[in-house]
Figure 1: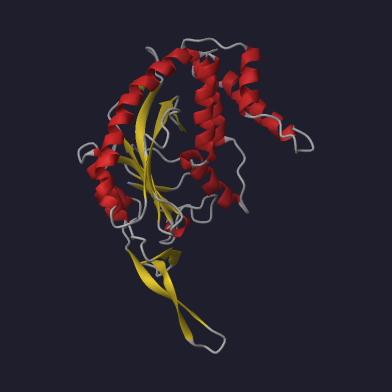
Figure 2: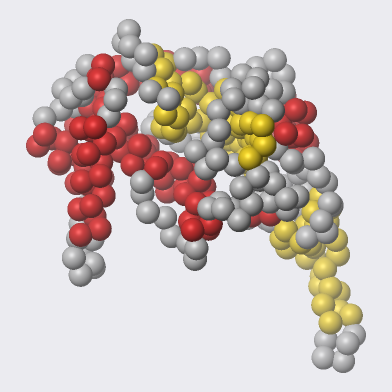
Length: 337
């Protein structure tokens, strides 16, 4: 086991305990170079919680304030979600909000996927513990033809402890080739395939719904594999590539000039031309992956400093606008091929 603290570097992983709250497996150092790296291929929920530094409790406190005369005033139906090990207030919630502890979230995930299949390859916390995520591999694999281009389907579960997000489980792919790892959102996997569960007392009742949608996901992986191979067997011309990228990143009519947009397009085309994946040269599949590489590694991200920008990029890639763009890229490629 190796630990990369990286405190003060470009990230916003939770570092409350003096080291980055994240773990990864397979001996692979994450692209941000932080967290605890385990040599195992995957781990169970208990090991993931410990390695990622997520072994802390949560509780709800009555909320109050003080008036101008120093009198305590109770705030009705509002509560503070407090992190047990630091006493930090993570968020303000209503009376029906159910605290969903990290251990409980992982156990829920175990029950949905099946204890023997729920193997975790990465997990962590952002924003001082306000947001927690775990990523579990599914047994399916997607191979492009007879090449070494292989994708692994995963289920991403994320939840918040500040009241900002439901418990959300969505499918994604992680593609490992040429020693590069990056995500490709599966286009047809909408929220109808995943599930969102509000922080209420009846959360456990949603397990049956989650399990049913997991079955849908497993079936759709086969469909996605077929679509990916269609793209990998279809050639794309330079003019088609330029048009495809322009459709994904159109000019901004309100901007003084389109230099920023043109630079993004150029970056994607450079990815397409410079990629080490020669087995699918000149194909729509390679064009799609040029887009995903840009989104995951090169796209500019807003933030007040480099640290916040790095965290915003991570959230975007996994569950935000970056994931949305990649889904659109897949859908558009299938329409144009």
